[in-house]
Length: 364
Figure 1: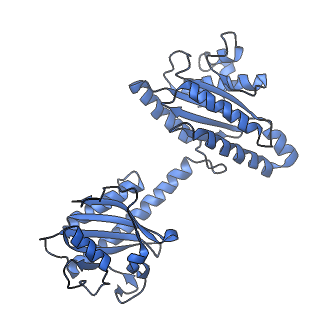
Figure 2: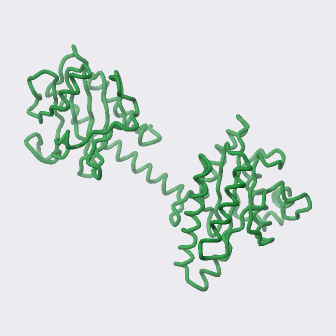
Figure 3: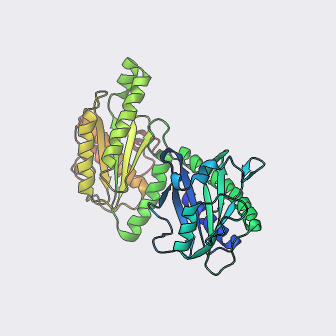
């Protein structure tokens, strides 16, 4: 679990390891969705019955059919105030270890050709987070009290692993998210751009960047206050996210201050330009500020070979500056503004020139 990169990978690792440790034929980890009153199976591992999937999309069970999960903190099957695992068997003998008898679980064991199961509550922050379920096939020895005690320990280890994974996920979210708008931040854009260019070099997938600069933010801040200015930034961020949803796999981000961008990979340049035009139209209707200056650069837009994320950023930035200088209400597209365009030519200056330092300060 510690080596997992995502929460789902951590849960899958937990299910597989618990199954092996308990000598089960299959295992599952489920999450209790309290607001909906149901158990959602996140992962199944091992010998699966018909209808069971390794990572099911919609395998859910009403808590009304499994009331014991609601009683994880109560009842005669707790020791020292902490819930422990219990065993159910497919025969008519009832549960082992004095645990709750659940007719639905017994029926499921029989239906799926399993002899017994051990169910362990997963507790997180003092609440029932979900459960670990491990079953053995018909013909295998049934689980006993020692297995239940071991499953209780495993569930505690899984809970610790889930807590650690959730903390790491929150750290990653904070590291790659703009706190005001909830969009991605510059760090996330840089990371995604590198991945995009890897795909561009390997597969030829087009990479496009839409760079936006909100017009009139300073005026709004000076005349109406920063709280209203923040509302403008958040509003435009929502518009950017809405337009980006039309481009599969796109990343909407705030670069800082009044600058935003939209990054796409695998989408034709003409489609990106169409969405950029829609973005300009929607920005005019925000009711605050003076619209947006938008520049577009794409490896698929006739601008010649673009082999680095830095160059694509410079081209998009130059196009955005041209849009701002012209007061254009439409996006300016790098490579389509004409060779005489003095601002577009800025993108072709060698790195380190005075113009580049002035125009592209802070662009990496």
